[in-house]
Length: 134
Image (tube, rainbow, N blue to C red):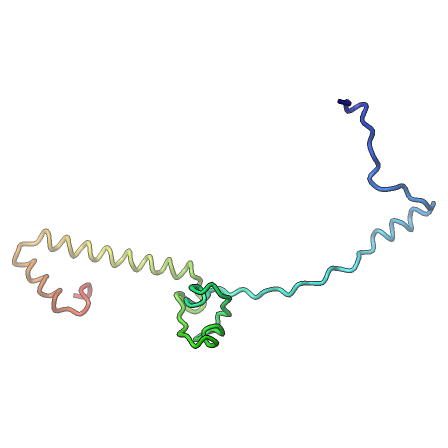
């Protein structure tokens, strides 16, 4: 095995042949033609539920995207217009947290109130269309 002192370095580029070094440096400074630019894909913030399920490219048009129009399907979006999927999920999470807290409060009332009051609450629950609005 040879040591680093014995190793010979190989030049990276050949030495210039002509004596005019300035001309060669000028030729290096001129940029070659840029490669053909690829067309940039447009990004859609939110794909409709159908395109997400089918895993197809959605153009994000509302009320119906191009894919759903072509397929003759209903087009629904989980997120509102101008809203990302992440924001829609956070909003949904906050709503579920709030609803969960109201149900916990309702069960707490049913457990801790006297039987007569609990029966009244149950009666109101059965007659209400939306239990948490009572």
